[in-house]
Figure 1 (cartoon, rainbow, N blue to C red):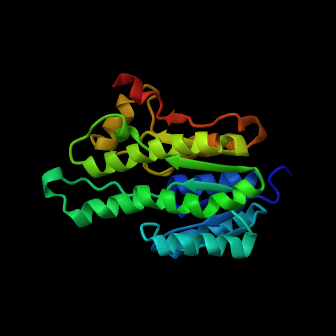
Figure 2: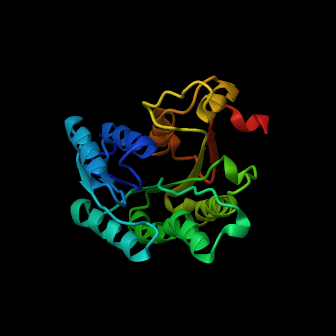
Figure 3: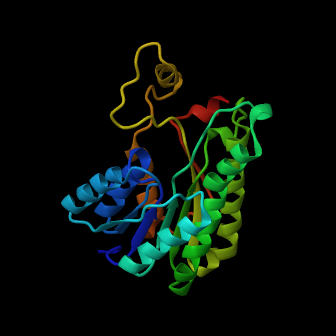
Length: 249
């Protein structure tokens, strides 16, 4: 199998999009490193699902908003699987807060989790990727990086910065076998959640050109492609997975 000895580290992989990515890459033959910051039981449940699929998984808990934790996460991955071949920076926080009410601590926390963690983890994983001339870094932005939303200044700044960082990585390391791409999801409330009539989620569903909200498989399939032989020429791209919402902006 093409990916038999390759390992994918996915932050925030105990639920929703992260879980879907982990399960799909396990099916593709990747060893999986699961990560969460608080509820380890969710990662344990996903690890069991992976093992039932015939895959291998380990859990590396840690707060990605703390640099020492990110280094520990990568070290745990390397102890079990030797190296990280695919880094998927999925975890993020998206608090809503008026800009004039945002304290320095509030701002710094968003930047640490959404932006600095991507830098720290990339720096820790890149040496092994470059040594073997193969690696994939896949980051996440969002529609709020393309359209301003009230109360989302910190989130928008952090996600726009990750977009810029991704472009920089793609041109600096592309000729050494390491690609970097960024995904912008639409609304992904959870695979089993059914929007209630009259709710904000139901309004978003009805406003979507495809008449539905996102499912983790929509992201997971794209990531499987980016990690495949067929996807190796995709580099430096912003890939929008939102059912056509942004064409209406």
